Image 1 (cartoon, chains in turn purple, green):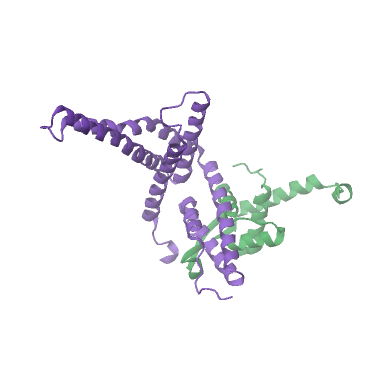
Image 2: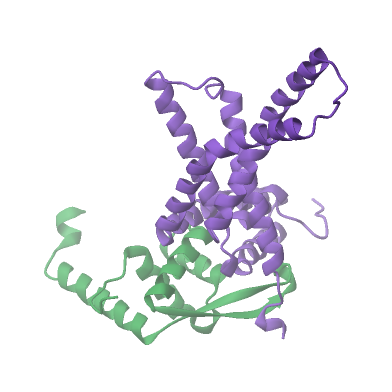
Length: 215
Length: 110
């Protein structure tokens, strides 16, 4: 069977490993996985090497998550707590801002009362929707910044604890108006994690400097 | 950190692998050495989580090597055992030896 000259490991697995790898091991862990993958792909089937890479990646991420929690539990807990404190503000702030802007700067001051009402009916729900999309991403970013090098752990914990609290609220029969819908709950959790990914990627790009071995 | 600390089971295995590999000890070789000698599949993440813990305790030290093309231009992180680490290995081995001394494990439990 012919093999391509350069075999690459699964891109998604590489991306996930890079997200969870601590900055000080950003060279060693992905490098070790790539070295073993290349060796395995040469000696056996590429499909087998890819399966091996996925298996190693999943186990490695699991270990990195556990060791991340063990090394800085209070930093992660503090960041998650901050996220929960910011949530109420995050959800109402965009709505308040848009309503305040509309009051100060009426867009169409010559419109009659009916049209102004219609304009409000258009903008206010939109503000709520924008808030619900952007606010959790921003909160995820803030939590990730506070969590220092454990962005992914903190934002995942924020999402899981948020889900846990919502489930408790549903069980004790005190659900919110909309936050019992599974699609919205999962969307919010994904938005927190996206915030973590954004901060992680920015930090990775900033910390990518030549290693002492290059000098 | 107390000077009377013992190594955990996997920590013990990892430190022994480092001692065997001497100046060639980095993630890939350590993982292969453990797999070959213990016949158990080990992940790179487990190796680094343990090495990180051992480095925090002062039992191992690490340094970055040269970047190589087969690693996508990334450097290897080489590890070596410190004198404190060797003392911990000896302490753990003595403790295990003392605990198993006089036990006829093969005859009694096999």
